[in-house]
Image (cartoon, rainbow, N blue to C red):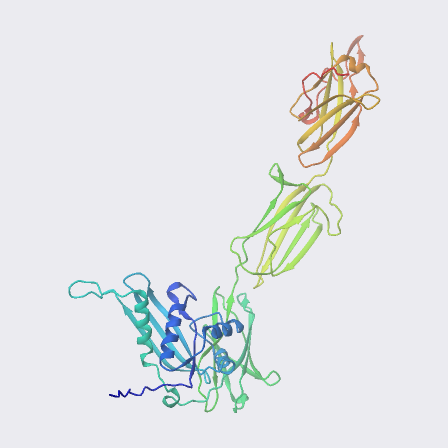
Length: 497
């Protein structure tokens, strides 16, 4: 027995491209590749020649198509010419429940590429929320099953032979759009240039209208540029604006299409400057170098930056600039622009940045440069059986360490002592004082790394006569130090000389 199959209408010559399905349930510009593949399989079963997703993604990347669920006319025409695609299918998921009971809402649009005309649209929704059997037994479907059924139902009425169903109405198509700038301040001018594709209509008799928010702008034809030109002042609200346009001419259909977007921004960046280095009394001290770290509270692209350093008199010593990318940190070595080291003092470091709309922000921090070497003196005073030695420190920066060496005339070290500035005095054997050729060498370094190594001549207390009485010239306070920065120790040195 021979079984005769009923003929099925197919469109073997028609090529269709399924753009990645926009999933609004995942947020702005969400993506659902599973339903995209399901739609491709169902269309292939209906006889369409389906373009591969690799070709579609490559086209979107090449043409910088970043928005799913919608495609402007210039890109639709490019799909027709570059990929020889007859139709495109745009799909959006407006609602989806991914946990049992499952629910899905799918919106489809079929667009003919040679005239950018929507020739079919369908919305399908299914849900298992109320799907319960009469015996109270659950008949809930799994996620993949409901996705397949929704896609299948949505495509059940897609036209197979669209050429016979809907005649082509001539339409002036937009070939090229330039909208600038993309980021503007409130009240700044926005410029738009629109070029139309080849048409038999005189373009001087064509009307191009641009719609932005509540504004309607009529573009003027520029014969030299062979394009329609328009400009308008940006709105005052900080948000993104969508720009649409219509092209009207005799015997041609007029349809509003999206031609671009721009952002209105009046908010300056929130910038905080941090300086990292050795601190003293709440102020960063330059110790060879300081690290300057910029921090944006709400990171955003910038157009340029400027880093300056000023002295206490306001004179600019450093001026560095850059564009687009803000470095994660800067380093200053305490030098002017020409490489000369700056003098000790207070300096202001200021960083200024400008965002893409030209909004300006700056932050400033002060630091102190201190390169002065430690200043020390040595004093001696005879006591009944010993010799007291005091090291006095006059520096502003705390000492990291000190070391005192006593040498004879041949340079041999007779004694050595080291410590910190918390000590009081050094006690030496009295017989050491009788050696007039002794040398006292001091090594010291402050907390910033400033260092000295020098031989000191000790001061001795002199006796002066007053009313036939002898007394110390320092009135018994010979070991007093400047600013309470006396340093030394109380331990007796070993008599190893």
